[in-house]
Each structure stands twice: as C-alpha cells, then as structure tokens.
Length: 341
Image (cartoon, rainbow, N blue to C red):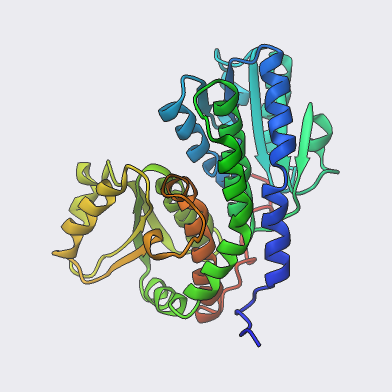
C-alpha cells in the first residue's frame, strides 16, 4: 500500500489538476473566438498571488511570439486606467474565490473600455464569474491553485501562439500537459521524504532571501509573499536573480538563509550565478531544482515551460511539513479577509 502523504489527498489533487488541463479545448475555443473578433493583445489582471502566477504565460508570449501580453495590477488599473486596454483586448482575470474586490473593480473598468473578459476561477457562481464574458471554472483551494493557474495560463499562451503562427507543435504540447497531473503527483511522492529537511531549514530562521529567474521567479515571489509571509508570518526578501547583484548581495552574511528556485528554461544560468556567489558566504543555501524530477514523456522544451508548476508541487510538500513544525496552520490569518482594509 502506498504511504499516505502528510495532510494530502491524492485523488483530490489529481482531480483538480486534471480539471485544469481538461480545459484545453475550451481555452482554445476562447482564443479562437477572440482572435477571430480582432483581439490583438492580452492583459493578465490578477490580484496578489493569482496575478503573479500569470507572469510565465505573459513572458512566454513576449519571448516567443509577436503577440502583445502584459501583466497589470488590478488595484492600479482601477484607479489609473490603461491605454493598452480597449475593444481589441482580451483581459484574463484569475481569482480562486471569484470575489476579490480589486479584481471586481478592474473588471468594471475594462468592460467599460470595451475589452473582452475571461475569468479563471474555482467558483463559477461568484461575482467575477457573473460579470465575465466567459468564465472557466476549475475548483481548487490554496494548496492546489498554483499548478492549476499555471497550467491554465500556459494553455492560453500556447493556443495564442499556435493560432498566430509561432507554435507548430500545439497538439503535441497539449498532449504532454495532459500527462502532467499524474507526473506532478509522482513528483510529490518522490520528494516527500526530502521535504521535512527543507521545512526545518525554513523554520529555523526568521527571514529568508528567495530568488529565481525566468519562469521560476514568479514562483519565488509567490512562495515568499503568499506562503511564507501570508500563511506563516515569516519575513522574506523575494528578489529576481537578475537584480540580486544590484543591492541584495550586500545582505548576505554567514547566517543569512537564501532559497534558490531553479528551473529548466534559458534563464537557469542566472540562478546558477547567485548560487555560486552565496555558497562562499553562507552555509544556509537552500536549493530546490526541477532538473532532478522525473517527468517521463515530457520533452526538454516542455519541461522548461512547466518548471514553475513542478516547483509549486514540491513546495506544497514543504509547506505541509512547515505548518506542523511551527504549529501554525496555513489557514491562520490575522488580517487577510478578516477586517476592512
């Protein structure tokens, strides 16, 4: 019998991530309809963590296609407006709850500007879903939403690339992604024995520098801000590996903890550079690397694309052990959604 993982439901995980990749056809239909109607740019407008998780898809479009993609902060969008949003814009708003106040304000603004709105949510009966032109629902919760949103936004970017002539193996890519839910589960199972040591190292210090580059940078930012800060009240300094040597390097001392997230895209050498530097200055270097994760049947290029989802899957195991070690449930909040702000 397979050993149970701490605070984890395997069937639930597979159901949620399979639901995410199962939206591939619907996402492609949304893209086809939007492009057919003259859409020329996409704007990802998610609040907080959900918005951060859209960055790899936007970067993919920026780096590999001529299709304009931007990530904007909905709170700012609602008060400043945007000259890039109009009738030829597809605005993608991810919100797990479908009730995020900033996203609702942004949605009203972009609808008034004539943009099409696609909402990605875990709750199809929510206010954001009701106001969207199209709503795609895949139920998830905090411990499973990262991979779900990463996969949905990646499918969206790949569809745009395929339909604008910058991707010729779309069907192959989608077929590979359909394998990912089980592969991510297998990765969690294989990594779980290592997760307590990383959780202990995180629990042992009061603050951490967290870094990544390319599509691992959003996961570094997300894990520092949304998990360690929001859910564990641990201070962090998320910094892009490209910026590490323009300020943050001066904070590194013998007892400073540095968490490096390493993926498999072209930016990996930027994180390698940080690792070489800090390894000679502190003995508290924590590295999480997707390269050693078995992803049978996934091509080298696609491995690079899904690195953030793989990291999210592994870090969930770290978080599960961390909350027990610190006797601090991941659901505990002081202020978030508990008071007006």
